[in-house]
Image (cartoon, rainbow, N blue to C red; front, side, top):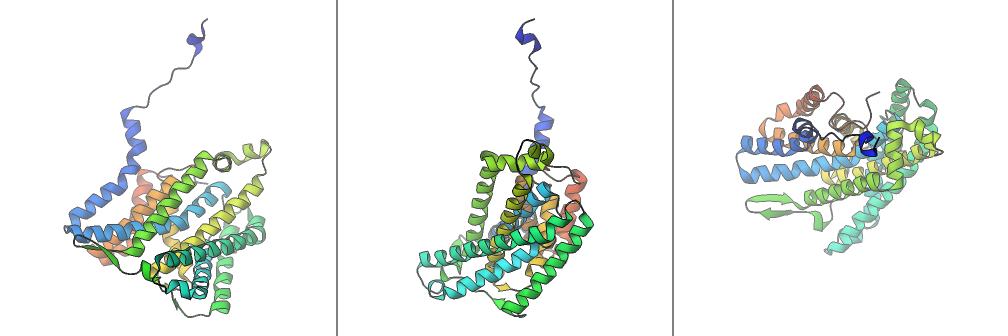
Length: 342
């Protein structure tokens, strides 16, 4: 018998299957088109769309680490918001130390100050994530109810420590001059900081996608998400991988905290827990362990929130929940689940 006789035949995907796979990619453009039709005015639509993209990408920064941790480690970490708050306050402290740079009219000094604040926040929250995983999370692997209780307790403790170190009052966080004001596109005024947030979010998405798809550590993470026992059987220390991923997720939350603090221009100890509702919505919409799904879900949440806040402010409060329900009715596992919900 010839080799060609036993060679398996490759069956091309049908047009319907290809459309089903690509359908989530069309959601954000379709939503933007519906928003344009509902708003009517091009300048207003452009302003709201950029604002929605900026908001969505900042949520993506905070949610990206959580979705990989959730998918890989099966850990329901309600304490993720603590890293967002701590990151914001550490960033505020660094920017206060670099007041000469943040108040300078020189663009490079402004951006360098923000970059150093981001690095410091990621370093601090990554280190706290190390202790958080070892002390709080590690003893409750595999026990979801205990995970919810202890991580929520960790969040409360972190908030009280912020009160002790930085005080209980809200703190104003000023943007450097180069990130203040707006850029005019026709009749639309686009805030400079929102364009900056969009750029940071896109760079992070491209970088994370490259790491997960094109590097050895990414291969191990993706394999661990799908079958952690097999990865461990091949001789890799899955617990060390868990720890590194948890630290990376915590550091990304710290980055998101700095970005969100500069976006809101006010930081509080509870800001992390307040934004966690949207973060969990994005993770659920995208599918567990999926960076691409998380990215699309964040864009949908950001765009819908801004459109509805303009068109129907009272409905905006529940629009993201309605979006999540609609997506789950269509795809119960999320848009691009890497693992099945556990």
